[in-house]
Length: 103
Image 1 (cartoon, rainbow, N blue to C red):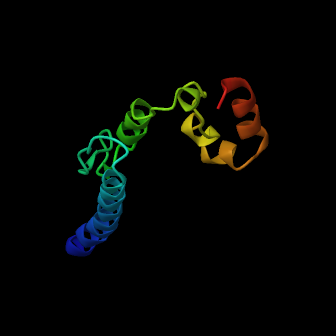
Image 2: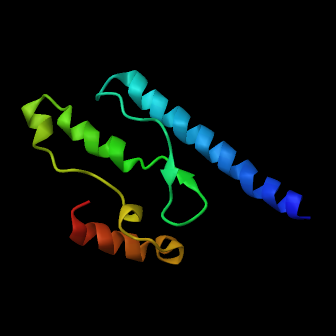
């Protein structure tokens, strides 16, 4: 039984890690920023590996050379500031967040 549990836990992690690395390599392949480490990182104290995509998002504004584009405000979505599945499932909350947060 323990072997099955361990195998179950590891399988999704391998798939997730592989997808994250491929995404990072695709970003690096575009040449928009200096190449970033495609490796994954631990997700806080949990047994998951994540890309930490914020590193890639943070590197992109520095690569903007057009002054008009550089002056545009950053864009995002409500799920970047709401960590609640029920709240995201009700459009009233994301609309309220985006209307006051500037994203």
